[in-house]
Length: 493
Image (cartoon, rainbow, N blue to C red; front, side, top):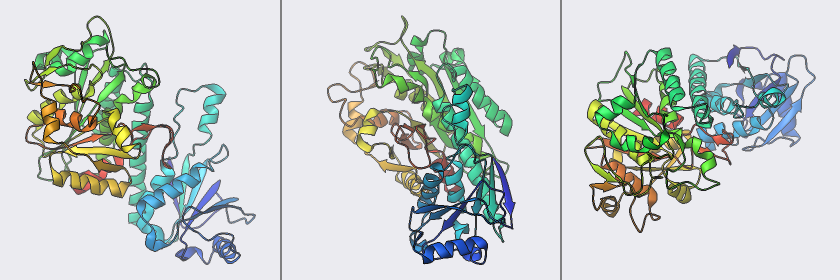
């Protein structure tokens, strides 16, 4: 997307967005032709600028765009980032069409504080999720995309331009996550996912190592290998990315670990219809890690960050793991396989243990579409947040509220830890008898055994990473959830 700044309002945009506060805080537009339109509409009670209210106005003035979309933001005292972002996104999304290639936005001083969420609301809806359509169908899918964004304002400050640039970096990275998650498993294979990570590392000059199955076997990552065993020649990989900024805080690194299940059939505990069809999205945690790395350098994040993504599929052949198998993890702990569809915690266990041992992070955060139980408990607007450090979880909650990528804390009770202990091995990947109860908490209790003394948080993003009833800023399927949340966390931790 091409960003343009202009001090003078012109007729160039195919549609101009004019955000207006209910209490008249519209500043330097009042003495323009547009200001007269707004004033007349408010005077005649045709537009009150209440939250979410909008009016599409057609102008015949030579100095104004033909289409002007007035968007009400409500009273300025009640405005917040989420309201701005979602209001603008919802209204704009319903007005995009094939003849709108250039979007204009009117800015003024009262809006400056909300530039970033305003820009995010516009940019996040500029996405095509129908990436495999062809011919006329693809042309139609692309009709709702725009190529240029013009910001009009008499005094556009450096800070406003910086906020717009940050919004663009974040939105581009969110769309990268969406593409990876939405990607069909015969397109986004283990190898192609790793290639995407390599391309990002090369672009930004990050350190990256992509370890193959032979290395994984040598390291003794039996939990990851056990999941991969049924995938034929589709071998496992472990992607390890590292970001070290030139100006870096003198703190131990932040470690991100993301579940990279390219496709999850469930193994011998086969997933049923109405569930298995969407299991290409089980790589959302890994995609989130890669998306975060796409933004780190451009946003000048000052923390040392490490990202690890274990990659595999969970399929069935003669070599697939079986319920009652016992495997030895990288940490040395043995694990009873009680259910082959509880595979995400297995590959995360090896990745977490390796990452904590190798990089000795200050904070360890993992992301995974891990449990259906989390969706039952929290739906599709909150991710489950669990962990062993209250200050870390408090910081994540603060960033979640700010970015509107919400989390809800769930408990890890000692009884849940006990439930994950095995009968014939150290641990089991699912408990017997009460496995349907507190599934999210028990999965986290299992992972906790592999993070050592690291300050750790687990985000179960099963309901938020992929859904068919999206928020205003999203489209059906992959949402890119967690990227803006984690960037805000890094900027403040």
